[in-house]
Length: 330
Image 1 (spheres, rainbow, N blue to C red):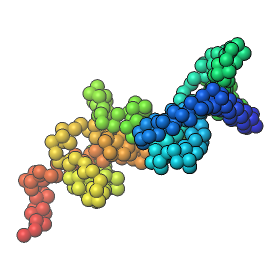
Image 2: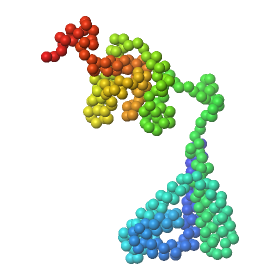
Image 3: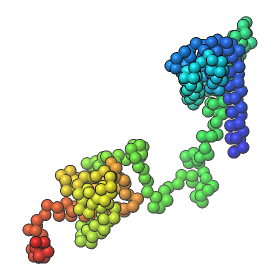
Image 4: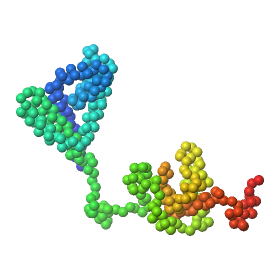
């Protein structure tokens, strides 16, 4: 397999080089003196010199040949240094445009070039017509070298087709399910689109009640667990009080919204759970690090944080008020 790929690649390179030789020799035979004259006239200023470098390189299929002609003109005193540099820049741009043109799937044009070139080369009554035929055949060879058939093995990788038997697994099936513990993950704007996950959208309204119904009851143990998980994963950005002024934010990271703000207070538990799971904006998804049960404990602790922000001592149970008053400074 590897030897076949290398052989195909070497053959394609040889075909490309021979086609390039035919194009260059045909153009030089047909228009060699005219090209030199055009290049000499066009290099009177830097802008036309640049365009001349692009055009001559596109015709000759060689920036080296264009550069040699420009160097010969400069050595003979027929061209100044600045136009010569402009010609070299145009030659580089011309080479880039030719490579870009060959990157498209233009293999269907190759047979037509072969036919036109063969007719012109065999039936042409004048020398320049036969040289044009040589150029057409050379272009066809270059396109054939770059077409998809010549590099088919480079992108047609071995793979299993649906429902094809495989001997790699004991059950003989080529379709495999995900291994236990694997979490489907994607990140970034493009990944959000391709994976179907939009980080800037909450759960749909019809899904919110069902997701909220899965939340476990809030207990003192779950709040303690939620606080511990919150301090590990959330506090670096959101801060321990949830005001969005965490240590990461103080070092230049975008500040998240405060949990005490009206939008976050109005957000449903299902929305908060979904944001922890899938991420939102610059917030990364935490589904691979925080399990579903811990996500719910964090949501419960967030509600406790929101309740604590505007709370007064009178809101605490009577048994706790005396202790809070005693601990109040000043």
